[in-house]
Length: 387
Image 1 (cartoon, one colour):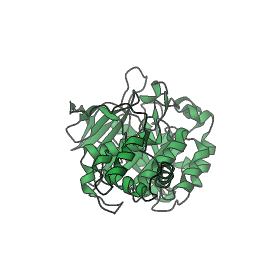
Image 2 (tube, rainbow, N blue to C red; image 1 turned 135 degrees about the vertical axis):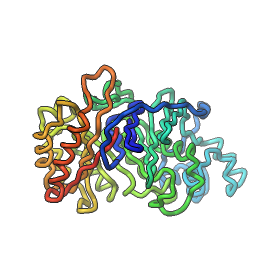
Image 3 (cartoon, one colour; image 1 turned 30 degrees about the vertical axis):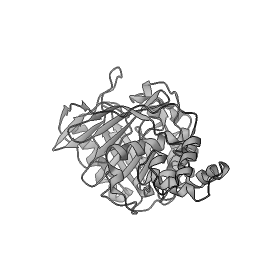
Image 4 (tube, helix red, strand yellow; image 1 turned 120 degrees about the horizontal axis):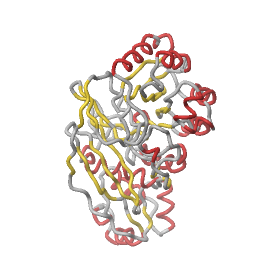
């Protein structure tokens, strides 16, 4: 992953090709930034209690009633966890002592633990988070007007894109809803963002203001748990994020695209495109063999809520002499015609052992300028992201 600052591309260890930083211009020089490790949190004790992290509000009420608790207790506990960042029942001061003791006996609040915490000079922060002995990464990227958290949805990835760092790792399992929600919780906790509580989900004073599902894994191949996690993330009594500040990225699992739009009207969708014809995309993004471009683009045109101000994002990693020609740019313009879109060009971060290089700055600039020149008439514009 890399971030942009003062005309430089600052490269950090790769998390996944899909993390888009939505930065506005290309830069000419590159240099590595050094990381220093900060203190990590301690491992949570193993417990047989039911973990209530990631359980939606109404389902939590049913759980509590089944355990003999008053039906209003769920909202109290929900608020303490997600609005105040409390992970111990004994600290929930507006709940009676006998009830707290019962809660502590029957339930747990387990958000995993951080085994590595890395901070770059520009504020980008990466965490290695462990759940049940298996680790995933999440990354926080601070910008002038927002702070974006990139979360993972799987341990490894099922898609296996040929240029992706995560793609060379074997898929282990889907993350649970609790493990997805915990990534947001941990970020807010370590960034002291629970101190900035208010009731406005669009508030830009929040440290973590945006969430992107662009980390490890294909979110649509774990949609059941992603959906459950989103219910907690957008709940006004939960983490209280606006759907407009959440983006879910997919490599092209066509059947779930409409379902996401129906389940969460107003949420943002990003497509990891990376090629403009089936022959190349079959090679780079193997899922294209199952869901070819014609099906993918057709489904994108039907995504709910698309209009001038509501656009799809198409991510396009720039690979030298692979997908970066002027002909590719022309085909991309034709492919996306009529779809309100942001084309997010991503300079490639080379991965050791993979036979791909980043396109030159000049080539990327030419590619971008051509797309932008056609943007108004084709209802989309180009954005350049440092990856």
